[in-house]
Image 1 (cartoon, rainbow, N blue to C red):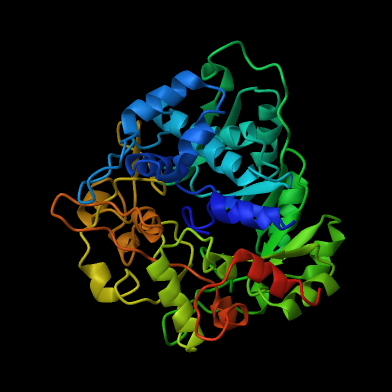
Image 2: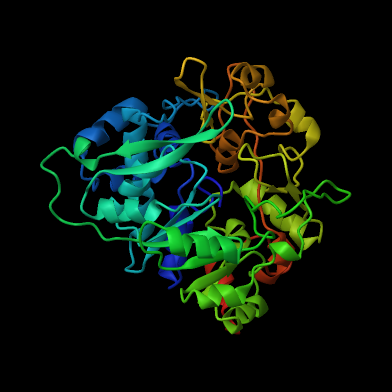
Length: 465
């Protein structure tokens, strides 16, 4: 659900309806500082931070980023420093606070559980982000786009505020080595270490095959409470096809029988599981339940509902495309710096258009998807395939890896109405992701009206279940 598309407003609405509302954990520190620079409309961030257990940290954040009344609309947003392997104090504090804020606000006004979703590929903020979400009482942690074998152990450690670590890859000259990020909650508390244990969230990794599901269940460092089984028709990042890379006439990767999940093997693992990827209809919900699933995960329908974080103009344009039967979602094999295929919704004026993408000056100034590499002197450097080609190759990267790569960090935050303003006056543009289920959006709308709510989605999906 991008960066703040599945925000606290949407997650709270869904959880209030008795389902599991899930906030996106992507880029929350950057979302937080931009909300503050926009004046914190509604005072929601301030309200959540008043409950955050580290008041001195709150004051540092507010003094650095809050602008009463909001910044000038043509002024660039101030940016926090980038995350690093060693840990940057400001970045870690922002990850702590922003994840607490999003979960706290999503939990307000009801007693139902709230989850949070992380991309395994965005590794640098994992540890402080998870701890911040647990401080706010998150009930479920969901993680995809990688193999998060060690997340269960992190959750177990944070229950008692103990230090935790997490492995991250470093590209060497001829091999990939593993380094470890470290995070100790005791370094951030402002009083004595909290004595009260935190609730241990359930962990649901996202899997695209029964092989991956078995690997996680057998090798994970702690308990896994359920699985999200996601097919290649889901929005966002998709798992690459297994086997030789083949592409259709439009340039999309071709998925075959080897990419179909064997649900019997999933059932045999004995864990609850949810099916995802074109399960946003009543019939598909029934199919999932008949296959033994506990339920379904739905993204596209909620991304386009009224409570979504997408800007109204973008949301309406995408819904009207669907109502006319003209919505196009392209599985782009090159767009994401991660190297994973990424679903891109075609929309005029966005980076989905080649001319618009080519007209953007390449820059990496958020850096969530940077990769680490070993420099000739043995130290660690950072690079991103979406940065300028000359910069990337100067750091030892392969020029071919930059072709077609788009800056998802800036684009996804632009999707929710907080685009960065450049010194030349240009504005970062959106890049939308939706699943193939966008064709079914008319089932939630009334005539030509592009507005529908989270409650409409739940009502329709559960009508026959």
